[in-house]
Length: 447
Image (cartoon, rainbow, N blue to C red; front, side, top):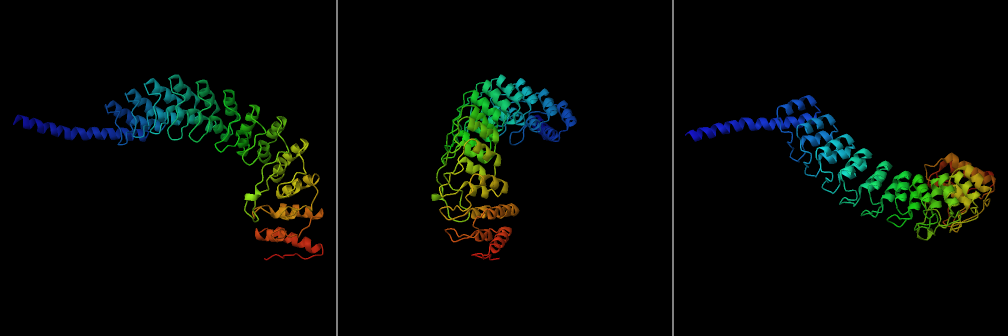
């Protein structure tokens, strides 16, 4: 009878106390989430379990650090919160602090015994997260505690150095290199730290990596030389770093484009000057492309063109002048007979056209498909082009005696092309100029 009475009393106590404890634990988590430091302090003084966790394993300390709440984190650490408890994704207080780039909390957690090589479920380390954040003090704190610098995460095979380079954190890149990071490591996608820095256009990191032994002539996964890729990505700072680091300025990509082709498109005068000074060929020609290209108004520019052609078409007048000064040949034609003047006309900039006209004045030239310079003025520019500028180009060409109403191999006149796009102002101007010359348009506008 006494035993039965004792058990009944014990059960009653448990029914009262356990819910109270559960409520206190829930209140603790809630106080942290609400950033209520007063309530948190009171709960800690009431001996509430500071290591209580949610269903997914996240603790109050994890929440405090996730919210970057330094005071709450310090209160919990002072009350004995465990620093290595991980949630179901492997997230620990340290990985959260590193992800936030909070060096103060990183140092406090390490001092409290946090595992410096803690990893998430996918192999992402605390060091990678700190490197990604850009906080070099957090990175150095981890390295001083023995963080493994060359571990790669499991999904993409990327290292902490790659994470830093991809975000342009040159100070972190330098710290990792000093700690022995492998500058030649390759990810599953065949990217090295140098390639990540190039894509980010981080010239400083590029130079640091090259100084540490990275190959300036490395290639992108598709085989494109790094220097050509830098120009194509409009990464002028990275490209200049590669040139200064000894990259081959004549190396061409699969289409035969050299770094100078890319720099001409980019329009970076400093890069063009450096390439030319290092021996880049201003008359290098890329490979033919039209044999594999679709027919129609919007065919790509012809292949076998030089950087001068590229610069003229891209409306890079300063680059055109630099290339001409470096003895670029204005008489080079594309694979289909495209002239430099045609490329300039396609820029829709009359000032470019006027300059190039002094180098290549053949306004009656035709391509293999019988396109004229006036066809070039309205072909491939699209309806969003500045029609006023196009009309200035057409007027200039007309003044110089360019034929205005020739049919190409597809039987289309410049009016046909402009009508299709449509370029209404160009259609009206061409019609007006043809009539003023005493003729009638071979194909009047269909509008």
